[in-house]
Image 1 (tube, helix red, strand yellow):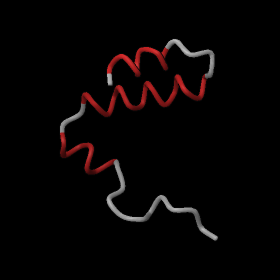
Image 2: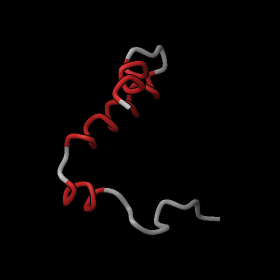
Image 3: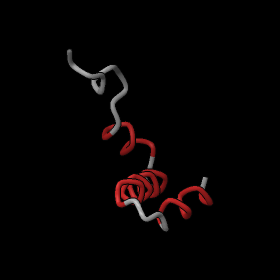
Amino acid sequence: CHALINELLASHSTDLQQRAYELQTLLTLNMNTVESVMPFDASCEDIE
């Protein structure tokens, strides 16, 4: 996982870099914090 993050951090795509920084930060947080910031239901589904 860390090798992938490092590869994405060096990407020319700023979108991939941003996602890598976000994932890297999530991996350093405790479980209670992750549960409070990540949806646990269908709240991220597209609205039609």
